[in-house]
Image (tube, rainbow, N blue to C red; front, side, top):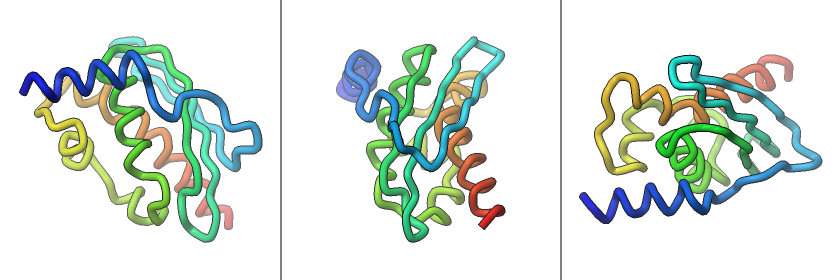
Length: 124
C-alpha cells in the first residue's frame, strides 16, 4: 500500500498533463464545494478520440493526483469509453479505496471532462 501512496504523492507534487492547451477544443471548469477543489480542464478531440488533455487546479492531494493519473491513462481513448468511466475505474487507477467524501475529490477531473465531452457530442 505504501508504494501507491508514494505514487499518489509523486503525481501531486509533479502532476502530469498540467497546464493549458492553447488550441483546445474544450475548456471546462469544475469545483468541489465540500473541500474547495477547483479545476480547469483542457482537451482536444479528433475523430471521436481524446487526442490531448490537461488541467490546471487548486486542490487537495487526491484531487490533483487523480487528475494527473486519470488523464495520463485516458489519452487516445474513445470519447464513449471515457463517458462510461466512473468511480470504480478511478479507484482502480489510484489503487486505493476511497471514502464518500474523498471520492468526490478523486472524480472531479473526470466528471468535469465528461460533462464537457457530453456537451460537445450533443452539439455535433
